[in-house]
Length: 215
Image 1 (tube, rainbow, N blue to C red):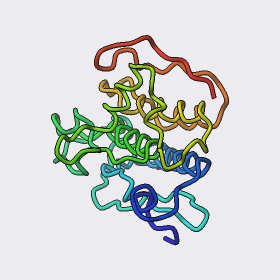
Image 2: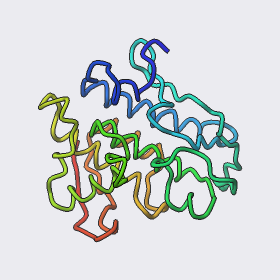
Image 3: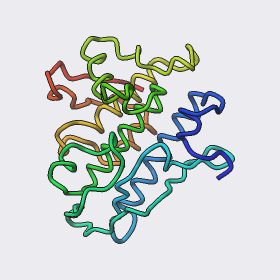
Image 4: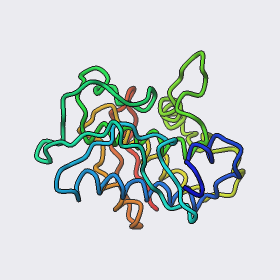
C-alpha cells in the first residue's frame, strides 16, 4: 500500500498524522469491521486487529489486512471456540481466559487501536511495567484529566471535543464486560452523526458517574 501501515505513521518516522486523517481512519476501520461482522453472508472474525494490520492507501483510506488468523463463524451466534491467536496487548481478557473468539473480542482490539490513534502511544507504554494503554487512559478519565493522554506530537492542532469523544469510544470498546461493548454499527452511527451519546463506562474497574459526550 502506498502509505504502508498505520503503525508506521503512529510509531515510526513518518510525518505526524493530522487530526482529520486520524478520525477518517477510525471511521474506515469501523466500516471494515461492520462489513466483516454484519454485511457478509457468513460473519468473519479478524482476531488480529492492530495498527500494523491497518493499511493506508494513497488517500489514507483504511484497508484491513492480514486475514491469516481470521475465522468464519455462524452469524446467529457470532462466536467461535478456538485456540487463542492474535497479538498481546490487543486481546480481550475473556478471549485470553476463555478461548472464545467473538465479535466483541474484535471490538476490544478495535478500541485499543482507537486509543493508540488518539494518544500516539503503543498499547504497552513501558516494556518493563507493561501498563496497558486503555488502563492508563481510564485512570486519567476517572481523574477528569483524560485529554492529557492526547498525542503530544499534534500539539494543540485537534478539536478537544472530538478528541474526548474518540477516547470515549475507545474506552467504550474495551469495556471489561463484553456485553456492554458497542457493535461496529453503533460506533459508525456515533462517529457520523452529531448526537449526544451515553457511554456505559460507570461500571468499569472502580466506578464513576456515567459520561455524556456530544459531537
